[in-house]
Image (cartoon, rainbow, N blue to C red):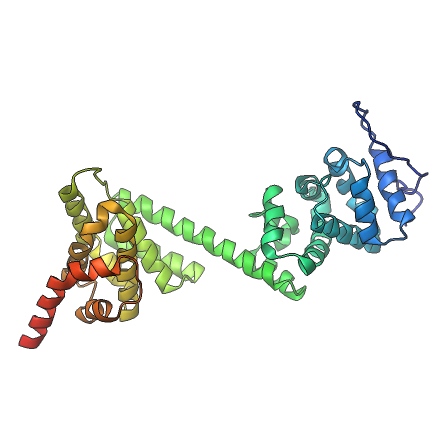
Length: 346
C-alpha cells in the first residue's frame, strides 16, 4: 500500500478493549488498529464500519491525526477511506464526530495538492447514495463547514463558478444547487446591509438606486426578490412606537413618500406591483402594530405612483394571498369604491 520510506499502517494485530483509565496518546497504535480491522474484513467497508463501532477506537481523540495523514495513502486507498467515512457517517457511528474528520483535512499542503477535494468529492458522492442533502448539510454544520465549501478547493480554484463546474462534472447536482443558494443568500444579505446603511445615512436617492442596480447586475437577482428586499429595508428603518398608532402611521407613510422613487424604479410591471402589495399585506398581517395601516399604506403607494389603479383592483378582486385577506379587503373597500367611481366618471 505504501512505499518503504512512508509510515506503515499495517503493523501487528491490536486487540482493543474497554478502558476506564486515561491512556497516553498513541496515534500509531490507533492507526494500526484501524488498518487491522480493514485487513480482517478484506476491504468490506460496511463490515469495517460495524466493527469499528463495536471497538473502543477513539476517533474524537485521534481523528485529527489520522485524517491529517491523507497524503500517505495511495489514490485507491484514499478513495476507500472516503467511502468508509461516508458509510460510518451513514450508520451514525458515535465515535466519529464530523469535526474530527473534516477540520483536519484543511491543511494547506493537502488542499493545495487537490487531495482534499478528491477525498471530499468521493465522500459526498457515497454519502448521498443513501442520505439526503439535508443530512449532509447537518454533518457540515456540526463540523462548522456548511458555509466553507470553497475551503476544500485549491486556492486557484476558489470561485463560485469553480465549485459549480466541479460538482456538475462529478454529477453532484444537489451540491451545485446548495452552493448557488448559499451564494445567493450571501449576496442578498450584502445588498440588504448596503441599503440599510445608506437609508440610515439618508443618502441621495440616485446613489441608493445605483447601489441596488449594481448589486442586481452582479448577482443577477430576480426582480421579485429586489422588490421584497426594498420593502423590508424601508420598513426596518422606521422608528416604530410601541403604543402610538398614529405615530406609526405617520412614520410609515413618511417613509413611503421619501423613498417612493426607489420603489418606483424597480416596480416596473403590474406583476411586481402586485408582489409589493402582497408583501405589504403579509407584513401588516404578521405585525400587530401595522394591522390597521394596510389601507393607508396602499393609498400612499398609489398617491406616489408606485401602485397603479389596475394593480389595486386586481388585488381586491382576485388576490390569491389569504393572510388577513378578508379584513384587508374590507378595510380597503372605501378606497376601491372611490377608484371605481373615478373610473366610471372618466
